[in-house]
Length: 118
Image (cartoon, rainbow, N blue to C red; front, side):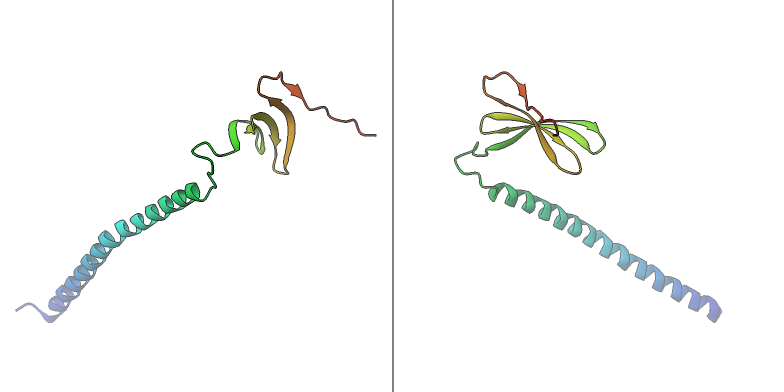
């Protein structure tokens, strides 16, 4: 019979191994469940956004469309937006947006004139 000190060490080691096995089984079951919940909530959010976006009038019912963007500098970009068959060039910064030019279908581009300060 082994000395009592070795017996208690073996018992403690087997208890730790059992606790570690239980932890690994819980992790193996709960981690995929958590990943599935995250994926499902993202899918549901995307689905609800497309359903509740107000797509009246068929598939192309939206009146506003982002055509192109171009980064000028950090925090500054140009964006072309199509709204009711008009292309609008916007200058976007962290402080806001400014309309720079507007073109209708079949028109030549003309920049918006800026008024001089009085």
